[in-house]
Amino acid sequence: MNGAGAVESHGKGARIVLSDGRSVLDFGSYAVTLLGRGHPDVLKAVAGELDAMAVSTRVLANGTTAGFAAELAEYTDPGRLTRVWLGLNGCDAVEAALKLARLATGRTRVVAVEGAYHGKSMGALATTWSRRYRRSLEPLLGGVTHIPAVPEAVPGAFTDGDVAAVIMEPVQGEGGVAVLPPRFLDALAAAAREHGAFVIADEIQTGLGRCGERALSVAAGLRPDAVLFGKALGGGVQPLAALVATEDLYAPLAKDPFVHTTTFSGHPLAAAAGSAALRAVEELAPRGVRLAELMAGGLRRIARGHPGLIADVRGRGLLWGVEFHPGGAAGEVLLELSRRGLVVSPCLGRPEVIRLLPPLVATDEEAGEALDLLDATCAAVPDEFRRGGSGAGAEPDDRFPLGTGAPAGPSRGLENGAEGAAAVRRGEGTSPAPGRSRVR
Ligand SMILES: Cc1ncc(COP(=O)(O)O)c(C=O)c1O
Image (tube, rainbow, N blue to C red; front, top):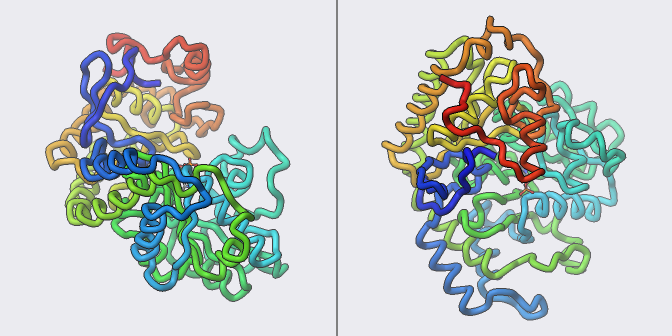
């Protein structure tokens, strides 16, 4: 998408080298590289397991996998969340949670939150909010109600007494880095408990220290029945996701382990990476506090300096969203940043927000460099993308297939709108040569 003709070649720590020799800072990668790239302990653990038992028989117990499951339960909420199911992608963990909640309660309804993102597999998609990903596939899994993130909306969702589970992200990452109000989360968890529904905390993006806690929901006292992890869990080296649950929620699987299986669940290489990753994120936690302060201060300063462009900055720990005024500036900035040397992520559900996801291993200098690049890029954005410019005032448009907010039509388009996505599919490459950039 964004390499200006080059492809990613290799990476170490917070940096990636492209095939044309350019080096870029990686503050994106959709929250996977919390430990940066090539964390030595994770690589060593995976190499050892690769030699020993690269795949499991799935009929014999595997010590690496079992050991990791025990460590993860101990890490998440010791003594309360005692059961673990492992998958590869985040949506695997969501599917497992939804199935278990239905099986354990005999009920079918699920309460989710407006703005939520829980993945795109058919079950998870029903709990994801954005119409853009859902509408062409409906009808999806039935019985899902999305409610706004205000305490007043909670009681109405439980009137029929048939709710199996509520599912929520304490901070909605793909939903634009929306920090959900504690009063709402408290009310939702309390109502679920009162009505015999399970509380599923989707911490696939927020967990493992990304937002300063192992799991925000546990730290906030929500007492979730399941915490879901993914993304960074495999140490930025292996695909890995997990459901960490109470005995009650896990009961259907304890009774019959075959009610939910996948071939690569509990993959030993991923489990080896996960064990090393848990230790590494704990060791690096103090570094996360320092980096979070740098990012918070720097981003707020940048927002103050570009009021016509930036509508808001918000976040927690190492998960930050920069919201641009409607009109395509977010896509413009995201593309130009990658040309100048900083990779960030778009928000899949909010095209006008870009996400900065610094890794725990970023140095102070690298954080400073990233902030300087953002500041300089914002300063160079053409006036038409600023409030009061010709592009301002347009509504956010979820037609943009890459989620970057780049305009789809030719009139205001950078090269990355609908046409750009089509070109990617045709294998033509889309990113303009650096000289063609419209950003000064
Ligand atoms: C909070 C949350 N839940 C679930 C998912 C789905 O994870 P995956 O894309 O690995 O299936 C994501 C992915 O962005 C996520 O951010």
